Length: 87
Image 1 (tube, rainbow, N blue to C red):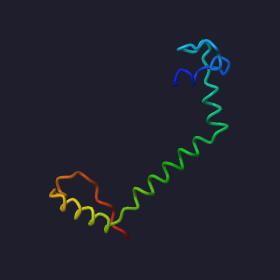
Image 2: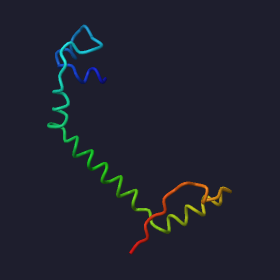
Image 3: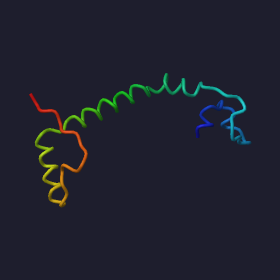
């Protein structure tokens, strides 16, 4: 797949496949960024993921500690980051 991304379209559709491109091009990546808003989708994914990650509050943290204790484990032995206190 990676080598195909550097091929021109005629070479991709060729009857005789090649492992490496005979004519290297980055036009496919340019098209990906210009035609398909890939950077916008990446930003949206990172923004959403950071919001979901930071949505954990103190009550969730306490519940997770109880769940860990119910499994017979010590919450102090599990590496984690405590959520910031709400103002």
